[in-house]
Amino acid sequence: MNPTETSSRLRILLVEDDEHDRLAFHRAFEKSSVACEIRDCIWAEEALLQVLADASLFDVVVVDYKLPAMSGLDLCKELLGKKTPLPLVLMTGRGSQELAIEALKAGVDDYIVKEHGQGFLDLLPVVLPEIVRKHGDRIARQRAEEALRKAYDELEQRVQERTAEVANATEQLKRELTERKRAQEALRESEEKYSTVAESSLTGIYIDQNSKIVFANKKFAEIYGYSIEQLVGMESFELVHPDDRAWIDEIRTKRLKGEEASSEYQARGLTKDGKTIWIVRRNTRIDYGGKPAILGNIVDITESRAKEAQLIQASKMSTLGEMATGVAHELNQPLSSIQIGADFFGNMAKQGLQIPHEELAYVSEQMTQQVARAVKIINHMRQFGRKAEIQREKIDINQPLRAVFALLGEQLRVRGIKVKLNLEDDLPPVLADSNRLEQVFIDLVVNARDAMGDERARLDGETTENTLTITTFQEHGKVAVTIADTGPGVSDGLKEKIFEPFFTTKEVGKGTGLGLSISYGIINDYDGTIEVASEVEKGAAFKITLPACDRGGQKL
Picture 1: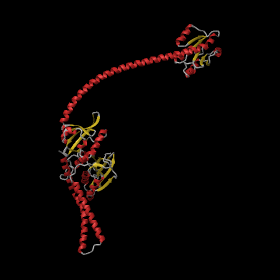
Picture 2 (picture 1 turned 30 degrees about the horizontal axis):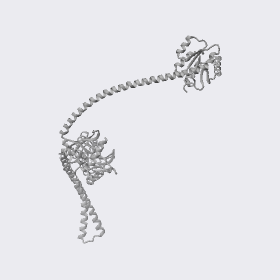
Picture 3 (picture 1 turned 90 degrees about the vertical axis):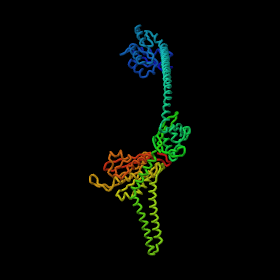
Picture 4 (picture 1 turned 180 degrees about the vertical axis):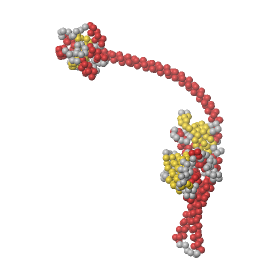
């Protein structure tokens, strides 16, 4: 209950040390019709603690001026200083004008002089409820005035803030209009400059939005054989070779989503007359007309891919020459088996002997198997030696590795090189060409073979077993291959050069210097990486990583 409002019972805290006066006070209310509840206190300190503990227990505090240790006026001042929300009435047996003025100035609600008779006591049941009511009215009025003043101040503050906002908005609008004019002028100048640059560029520039060409410069139209008017609105995939559309669309989709994707790559395009061309694409994501788009430029490298293909083919022929001895040995075994079978049939015929049916079937079957083995080796050589275009198809990277060791395994064994194949099963496929990857692996294996040579002595005098370890595994959404040897290693000074064209550490006439640079280019064509880790006298390890894809051909 609000202590400033009277209830059905008037709750009075009486602070009076004179027992006679306390009893008289109680009798005055007992004789009246005013229902009340009176709590007595003798000491001012006790009354102070009760009010401060819970002022809501009382409706009014009546204090005698003369109290032990602390005067009633001092108690009233203490309560007022604590902002006690209760009406205070000071009683005194010897009234004086000075005391009355001091009490009222301090904030006491009323000042009552005790009379020698009982007249003042009869008035208390009438006066105290009125004092409580007036106090409540005053407090309510003060609160209303305070609320009104606060509302006025808040309104004034809002008016000032709104006035400032309007002034700031006006000033901001002026600045924005000025800036907009400047921006429009700058945009006009920029468009003129961009148009000049774009139209005079030696590279093809285009914007692809919603899978359609929405902008193309003159060079772009010239490369594809269309007019600019024909290109604008064309489905962008029509300019891409069918075999490259899936992975190029994947790069485009990732780029639009803000995901990591190749910003530069080589691909095949289709001209208006259906001719296949090779181009280098560079692209980035932009906002065009408030919507995401791809801004790209292209360079026709069809000048350079033909030469590169010739170098790759030359490297293949060199590799085939390197493999000749090993292949001859591989063919020698099935030919020897066939010769043995033929000699067996010839001797039996010369002697006029009947060949048992079981022996005839067994020897014939063995000869057939050896012929198939020889044909497989020859076909593999022919397949490897053919001129191949860059293709992207799902392949198991273990397949070209196994093919390499089908050709070179015996050659490595004859040279005393131990081969360890740690090929992880169930690897996700990669988008590449098996023939080209086989070329890369053959180059790396042949280099490792030559580096290890015969069993060699270490610097500390101990001999080292020549071992070639091939490992495949998956990491971070990529398929990885490591080809590690126990050769002399690669020094730090050579690591930065080994992938450069025509760089070789072999003797004159024993290497073209193209193998690693071509391997680097092939792996790069398939968005992969190739790197070397090595320490002198501790061998070298080449690591190749290629993006893994799911069974549907989408990169993981």
